[in-house]
Length: 303
Image (cartoon, rainbow, N blue to C red; front, side, top):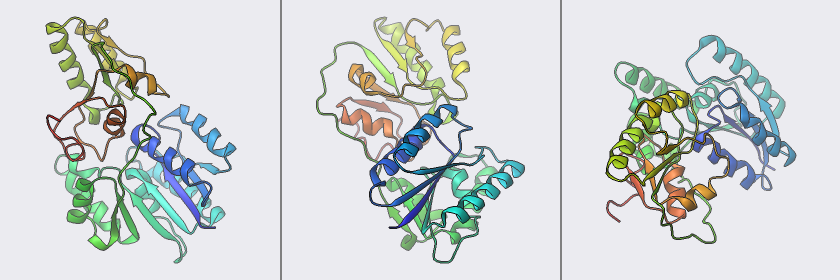
């Protein structure tokens, strides 16, 4: 049986969902091992416990999101220990930090490396950081056997800046389709995302303020946490929106929220292929979003 080591630092949001699908969907076909970091999301340990009970070997690695030579060195050393222990046939790294560390690992020549960026980091950066990160992706691309792009735009970016077409495979994200969906009458706008700069939570509040001024019955639900959650809560209070904006924090099961939503709002600044849009469509909910790559290829304006 093929032995696969999955590596993930970004244990929240879409990448968390993606890993859930891979580990639970492939566990009967492959010998799966999982290296993760709980630093970004301490509650992720509950997911790890489920994977362990399902027979998936899990290894905690002290990866951090930001660039940190000392922390990265420790994480790389730990990952190297895991690789020696697991002896994988395939290493599959997800998102920027895991992708960076995996490409620096020493591995057997027969071990293949697969990298899924889940939205390349450098296109969203300003100069000179954009060029620095772009150069880093290009410099390390020779260590990758296959890049998996989750959208056509991501495939174009990888092809343009990082690797040749022979190394790129496109595999879109996917979601389960619920057995039934209901018709909603309540004016409830759902924002399923984390409170981080990428997701444009400030614009969400601006939209909420404009809509509530015109229609006091409108209710906005911000379903997620993130590093800026308390800033979001403070700003919502300063704008007098605490009655119109609900802030339940992280919700593990979003089924009820999608069923109650009249509209799903996505104000992201950049994306790979967001699960929030796919999930909204699965529940037959219209999506209002910015015209950005990764989103505009799955939304047809006005339809």
